[in-house]
Length: 456
Image (cartoon, rainbow, N blue to C red; front, side, top):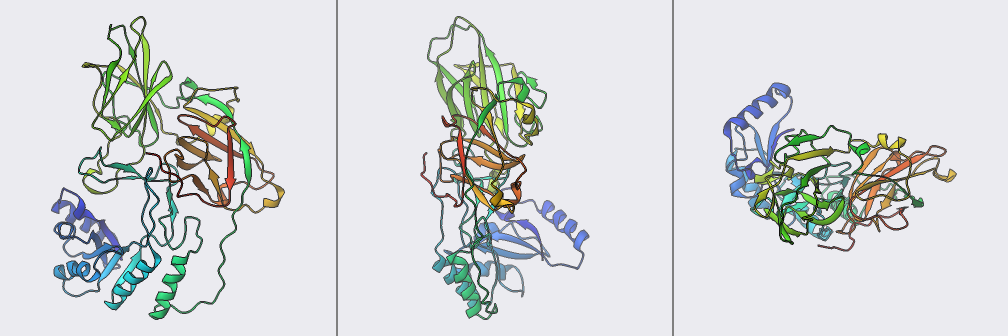
């Protein structure tokens, strides 16, 4: 089976020409060697537009849906064929600043038994939890407004799946296994399965390297424009962009009304490299008050972070950066210099010497050799407790975003293959946006923390 589209019925366009073009493109590649299929959500409005002629339409749903009702959407459309739940959810994805969701194992088993009684086929999504390494974590929206409802996803995609992010077996796995054995869909396997050993490699101390305000961090030629440009116009997909302009003597009466129209996704505001506030996209027009100098010019800097693109529904055309104008009172500011920091790699930091202190946002580094006990490296977790918000890199591999201040994810998963065995040197880089711990300590632990405190 080859999937042609995914939940297209949830998208506003309902473009029949697109669907037929996509079907024919797939047919040109697979010919008659595979069954083409689509997936849509268990709602009539999604089946009004999601299915494609001559492509087998399937459904997706979790534990709370009525399986018979969901499969009826398939039966109404096509004659014959098995009922198929192409995405059966035994867990759920997690967002920053929200409790980590869990799905009860017994409820998963009950829905499995319901589908099996209907002679249905189903595929678990997810069966094995995963990790959004790098900047691959996306976002959702829980509202009809693409700003107000924006909720970025965690780096971890553990999903409360039957197999964890690190591949360990859970109670849910064994209950699913027993259910399939009872239904004679799986042979009994008496092999003893034990969790993979993880390592707590201990504490390491980082050194300050360089602030993002330093020109040595500018790996891409800055762009200038009268008005702010989005990431997409500058051909920037991931990471950060620093927007800079000069505030001239305008004799404003402090505090001055400062507006960014609009922030995608999160902004840190600086006057002469001193942080004066933060903004996020939860308001279409993001406003705060500034106290500015009327005696001399000041540099205004706005660091915009792409926190992940909306990947579902009407708002998947998710532009990043400043989408509109920046105003002091009613005056549009400009011209602008925009400095992109996609952070595709960190090897260039190897030539930079440590310094005593540095202004955030900044890069920090530690280098370490694992104990001789670890000639075969083991999986571990980077505990970011004490740090605030940023991105971690190990041996030039982007481990993903961290934000322990917001929760619930505190640790970043580090597979054994990302580490170098002794006597090789490992290099850890932390790009911290707001505040590093005083001792600049970081530790590797042997257990994940994905349900930490929530701070909204």
